[in-house]
Amino acid sequence: MRAVLVRAGFVAIGTIYVAMGIVSARVALLGARDRVNGVPGALRFLLERPYGAWLLGAVVAGLGGIALAHVVRAVRGPGGAIGRIGLVFSGLGYAALAWTAGGLLLRAGRRARGVALEREGVSWLLTESWGAAVLEAVGVGVIVGGLWEVVRGIRGKLLLRGDVLPRPLHRAVSAVSRFGLVVRGVTLGVLGYFLIRAAEEENPRIVRTFGGTLDAFDHTAFGPAFLAVVAAGLASYGAYLWALAFLRRRV
Image 1 (cartoon, rainbow, N blue to C red):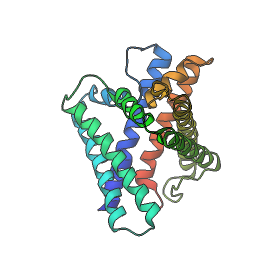
Image 2 (cartoon, rainbow, N blue to C red; image 1 turned 180 degrees about the vertical axis):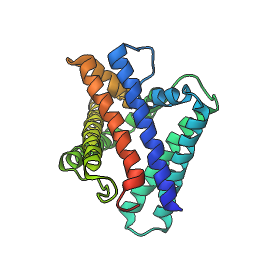
Image 3 (cartoon, rainbow, N blue to C red; image 1 turned 90 degrees about the horizontal axis):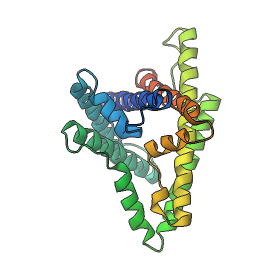
Image 4 (cartoon, helix red, strand yellow; image 1 turned 135 degrees about the vertical axis):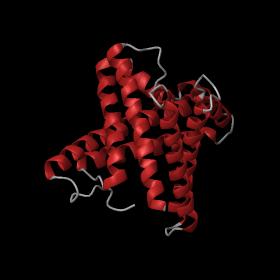
């Protein structure tokens, strides 16, 4: 049962990343600047598709399933305390994403409040004497996680079975997956950089969500061209998660 929930979760998260890549590509290539970028934009994009309510409902169910699987494994599965804590936090993160998607599905609000809520949390954190140190540590952790994904992408550590697909197709899937891992890792690294800057300058307005980071990419010297590459990478990472759902070595 747990394996089914995890696979459904991979499909759901992969769908969000593919949608995020499509929305970002529209911003980069078509100048669709009225669109909300990042996860909120991806969820709205899914809702606007034919049978969008059913599609977004399936995503919510998949996210809820993988959240439940992580929490159950943390409580009943093998592993040490650190691993269990990591599983709990992962489960809570997936549950929060499912809540966001479910709120949009139920028309709980027209505007994305992710940036405001995140900055409110950081503002509270920075009022504490220990808050800046904690925020900086989180930023370092996010950067380390991003670097780890870059390394996995470069080295091809994909956890995909090689005995299911024909070799040429497997190579194509591997190439797309490695590109996606590298791009997501770079994006996480930039997210962590903004967290560290916010801690050092004690300014919560510096914090960026995933969408805010993509907007920052769009305003670099390379502009829309760089954002288009990142968009392709996010969609590739989503395809990698789809591949994990069905080709993972162990679940």
